[in-house]
Length: 334
Image (cartoon, rainbow, N blue to C red; front, top):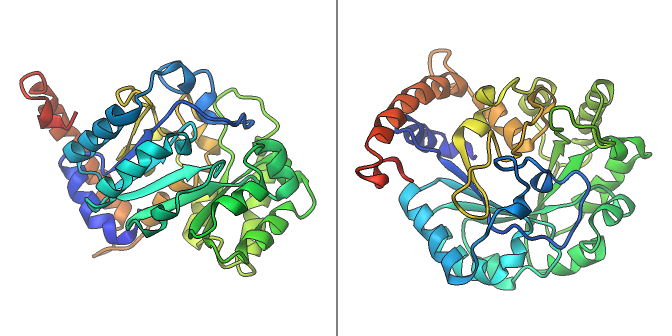
C-alpha cells in the first residue's frame, strides 16, 4: 500500500472495513510449481484451491464488480490459480474496476500473452512471478519459461516478484545473476523479493534455515546498491529479520480480506492460507506494510500505533454491524 493511501486506509479500518482485498480469480493453473501455497491441501477451509468451485464468464465479472461496489477497497490483488486463465473475464473487469479508482495488482506467471490493451489501463500493475535465474526458473515453472515471459510482457511495464528459497541460495551467485538479467530489462519497473514462508510443520527443500535466512537478507542488502530496481529499505530489512509472530501481529493479514475462487470462502489467516509459520514469514507484502508501520507521524506516534488503536475501534464497529447483518446484509459489506 502506498504511503499516500495511509489516511484513507485508516478511515476504512476505523469503520470496521478491510481496505485491501485479494481475490483468487480462478482455481485453475497450467503450471505445477513446487511450494505453491494455493494448491496445498489445507489452503482454504481445509481444502486445496482446486477443490473450491469457481465462477466463469459474465457471472464472474458481475460478481467481482458487485463485491468492489459494496466494499470499496483501496487495493485489490488478483491471484489464482493463474489469473490469465480468465483473461477474457479480466478484459471486461479491469476497465470497470480500475475506473473506480481501485489500485489493482494481477499476480501472474505470464504463461500466456498479457493483452496489449491492459498497458493503457490506469491503476493496474502486472506482477510476474519469476523464480531465480533461467535454469532454476524454467525447471520450476515450465511452461512459463523465460523465453515465454519475455515474449508475453512485450509492450508492458511490469513488476518482477521472486521468492527466495534454500535451493536458490545454494546456487553460486544465482540471486545476483537473476537481478543482473531483470534489472537491465526496459520492461521492468521494480523487483520485489519474498523469502519462502513455510506452513507450520512443513518439510521442504525450499525452507531457509535461520543462518541461511540471515545470509539471504545480507545478500539482498549487498546487491541493492548494484541493482536499483530491487525494492529494499532499511525498514524492510528490519521487517525481514523480525517478522510478526502471529497473524494478529501482521498488519497485512489484518487489513486484507482474501476470497477464494467461489468468491465466498475466505482464505485465512492471510493470503497464504492454511497454517503459515509466521515466525519464518518472508512475504514481501507483509514486510512492506510492517516497514510502513514505522513511518513517523506527529508527537512520536508512528503509523503502527495508529493502526493498532484504529483496528481495535474497527473490531467493535464490525461486531455491532454483524448483529444487524441478518436484517440488512449491506451493513457489514458482505
